[in-house]
Image (cartoon, rainbow, N blue to C red; front, side, top):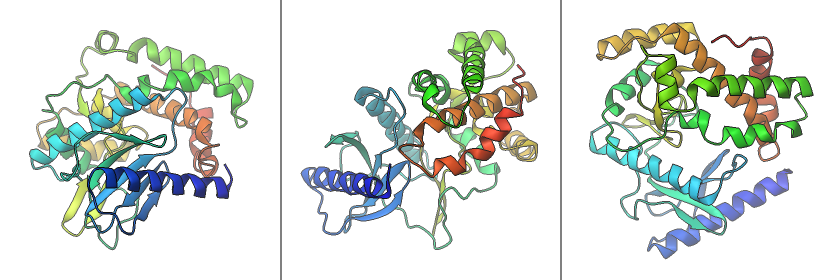
Length: 306
């Protein structure tokens, strides 16, 4: 997409959020775009409400799948908030459901009191991941098994031939590795048969220690779009041995299990393939081309070992 097309997408997403918010009874006088990357995040000023509108979508993402994913996120964030976990909660001023308008599906959240030193995707100590795992473990609602790996990726790998950065041999390798991992990760039954000593629980699904917002009242977790049932190692994938060792100390202190080295290797491999799949998103978000180069190089030099 060109710069003009990206700007137009942002404008249309913002207008859709404003129109939807007004239909829900909110007053919106001067919307402000707070963030614009995979989602457009809009403060619906003067209301203390933020709309998040995903605009970069994977192949095969249909309206029903997207709405179900957003509903899970809303439900989990609301439950965590009720338990006293520091999260950015859904807005209480509108119904807690996704809203579709003008081709965009959106959710509404409370406006966080963002601190001056907040930077998007700037991580905190991995101890926070252990804290979240301890708190989210009791979530009572249904969750799909390892959704970030099992949902959406099959459709993405089907169109991997269109990626200019991959040779035909690399496309074949990626597909072969994905099918190998799917043989043990596609559902909980297969997983437990292959890894009987590794437990699963609700997980955030996308590097929780990096999906935080620094607020004036402290750290708050955000972005539970990929919430799922799975091994905690997925939330630590590709963070490196030092971070995993630090997590293990924090996990034991909270009564959680230590990570399993073999499981961590498998989750690292799965996460690398997820990033390879993200190459298909470059037409929707061109800056990914540079951002994914180092991950692509790492994948090329790392053999798959189960």
